[in-house]
Image (cartoon, rainbow, N blue to C red; front, side):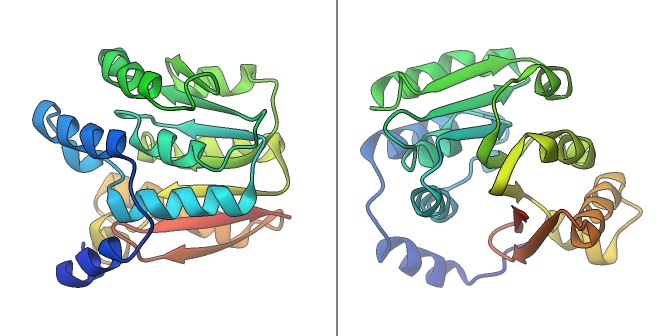
Length: 211
């Protein structure tokens, strides 16, 4: 589902802040080498992640679902000088491309890649977080969320991607993933520990603030 006219999206990108060259190169390599390159955050959403991170100025960022590393590098643009970003990716085959582009960025000393199952790794993390980007296995969103909330600092932000699932959350709850995302969205809306708003950008992004 595309909620914005393609020409308007292109206009928005052209009139937004400059995209670093290494991200343009990463986008190109992802499109050439990956089976599902559409999983990349993309230019407009990437700039949104960057500016939100800069507004929050987080000390600790967590990303669940690295893919090729584009979103991690966008989020890292807002890190405090002594800040850290931990990104968790299940697919070990993506390690090479992730590290390739992290290492050409100025954030290479601040980004830690952990490979494995996020549901196993999350309980082991000792840090608390100011900003989280959730973009991994959609049926586990609610499980991730319940594990994350105790690890969020007050006022911390969770950005949950793909929360509209191509519109299937409103007209195809027979789709198991759509049903899981709908359950997640409803749980978050009713959670007294947080407040949220869903933006219909690309496939939907929920901005969740811990009270």
